[in-house]
Length: 394
Image (cartoon, rainbow, N blue to C red; front, side):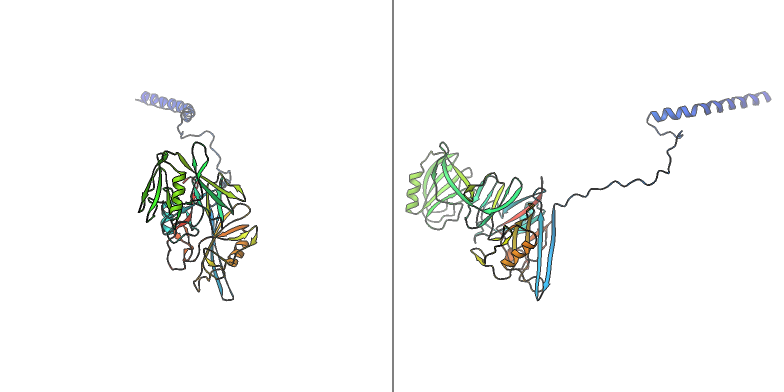
C-alpha cells in the first residue's frame, strides 16, 4: 500500500511539472489561431491616459433661415429670410399644375415636389396663366413680356437680367422661319395667330370659328375649320387663326406635309442667353447694382407706396440666393413694407440685385411642411406658381 502511494504522488508531481512547462506554449498557439488566450505573457498597460476625442465634422446646413423683427415709433415688422447656396441644393420654379392654367395651395405644391422649402412665385393672369417668361427643361412654356427682369439658373449659378424672347415656326429642312409674329401659349383674346403646345393644355380654348393647322407625327397633317375648341396634339403643336387676316396668313404660310419645328431664343442686351437650366420672369427691379431702384408703381401690383405683405428674391455677390417674405396687414404682428422700404431691407441684407415677386395674401414661405410666415388672409391663398428647394439628387 505504501509503495502505491509513493508511486501516485510521484506521477502527480511529474504531471504538474509537464503542465507548468507546456501552458505558455499552448497560450501562444491559441493566440495565433485567432482565439483569446486566458493567459497573457505581456499584458497591455492600463495607465496610457485619456485618449484624444475624434473630432466630429458637422455638415454645412443646406439653407439658412432666420427672422428679422423690429418695432419702432408705432411701426412693427416681421420678415422671414431664407439663404440658399445653389451649389448645395436644387432650386426651380414650378407651375401649380402640369399644364399652364389653374391655381393650387403652396402646401400642396410643396408636398407634390417633395420639397424642403417652398416660396410663392411671381404674377399671373386671372386664369392662372403665368405672367411672363417661364422656360425649363430646354423649352419655353410661356414667352417673356420684355418689361420685367428674369431670374435665370445656368450651370447651377443664378443671375438676374432684363430679357426678351423670340419664337418662330421653322422649316426642319432649311431651318428658315415660315411663321413669326404670333402669340405663344397665350389665352386667345381677339383676332390673330396663336400657337399652342401640350404644355398649354388639352385644347386651344377658342370658342367661335377659327382655322387650325395640326402638326402631329412630325408634320402638318392638315388644316381644318372649327366652331368650338380644338384638341392640341400630344406629340406636336397646334396653329390657330382667328379672324380673316390671320386665316389668310396661315393658309399662305402652312400647307399639309410640311415638317416643322418650334424655334426658341432668349435675348438679354441684344445677346442670346443659352444653356440655362431655367428662366422665370419676376416683377419690378428693387435693387440693381447695389442701388435702391424700387418704382412707385408697376403693371402687376399698381402702387408700391403702401405697406403690404411682400416677397422678393435677390443675389449677393458671392452667389447666395436670398428669398425674403415680409408679413403685413396685421396690426400687432407686422405692418408690411412699401417697395422702397423692402429694397432698403434687401440692401441691409447684403443683396446686390433683387426683384419683386407676388405679395399680399400670396406671400408665403414653407419649410419642411410648416408655414413659417403669417399669411395676411389668415390662411393659404391658391397660387399659380412657386419656387421649390430640394436636396441635390433627391
